[in-house]
Image 1: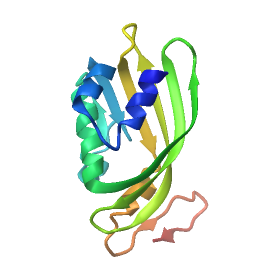
Image 2: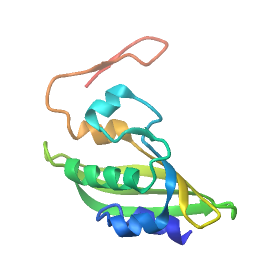
Image 3: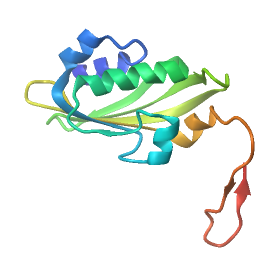
Image 4: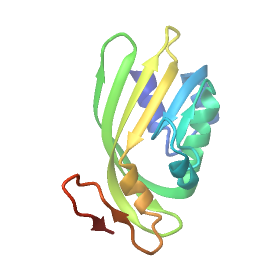
Length: 154
């Protein structure tokens, strides 16, 4: 569990040496989605980085810090099965560096720790609809999700 907590807490100030100590050389990192080309246009780190290892963590943590100014990052709950599988939930505060919009959003994360005590799989999820809205410049969008009819505009 210590490895998992360390990687969660190093996100605001990614240290390459520490990340290399915590992450397997062939670890997979899933950020926000397995694959979503449109989301990748807004958040270039979004998607799956198969077997890239520590570099995927360093790239993601660094880019997030360029896109947003980070506020508090809170870990509220952690669960483990005792076999190297962990999940955590919490919330964070961010302010977009381009639009100056601030929000608090929930996050969740899942990790697998290998026999050497290193992270071999990491999946990070958040309220991406909310976080990307901090970059919304202008205009409106129509969403038609209700199968019984009706759309909403933002």
